[in-house]
Image (tube, rainbow, N blue to C red):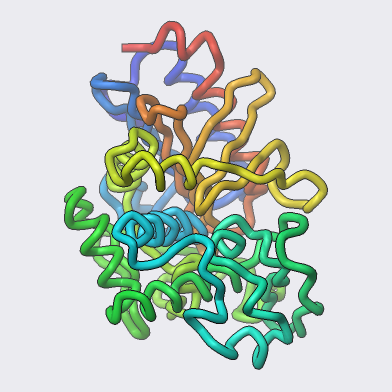
Length: 344
């Protein structure tokens, strides 16, 4: 399906990408919403929200955003920096004494908040069912790790005396009127309306048959990937963040100061900031934002550096070729000709 405002060849090409994404078992359903300045937003979808009933995917659905949560956590940290409540040079040992020493065998006096946020802490990623490898020296190469943001969430709570969910709501969701954006707690169910979420992995990440994980408790993901949102809310958040409406100039500059991810085996052609990253497309266009993969859901939200043109997309499954699908979608949506001559 596509909204009535989907006119012009550019939107037709985007719709073709969506159709391909769910063809031949690539996933149950996908949505994409494109906003370009003050033009009427375009919404497109393919496939279904519910594999049992055949219900189509619709605007306004809630879905798990996975690692896009890191952009929210990074924004909270930098707002605390702006208030003088903490510094990017503060160490983990200052805020969480003994935690990384006891649980990870690392030296918390050498790991700064900045290094947690840009994944240069040297801490390894956590993989269910596996012992993490030994930590590396902080300040070296980029290693994408959920542990970094688990610690960020703990530091936010130590610095504020409130929960991460409350800080995200108070500092971001309420000011921007993000009524569908929240960090669920243990046992919380996803708010209606929502797409069903489907997975081909069990709780340990091992392959299994397709099953419904909509009701799974993924609160363990926390600051690393536990949030829920909608396409319109993610547009409002990312546009405000890129446009400098959430942070003062100093912290804003820090957020978009990046390190190379080359050689890490992570997303190609990217550089990572403090919760957000840039990705250079084959056309030479550079986008900013983030992506998220979590059991049953894959999401992406990227835009130009000023936040004037932003695309948000979600698949309600976790077995599609994540990078190929979304790279194809963003290459189509942000090719130079489309930027010069946006469809009405």
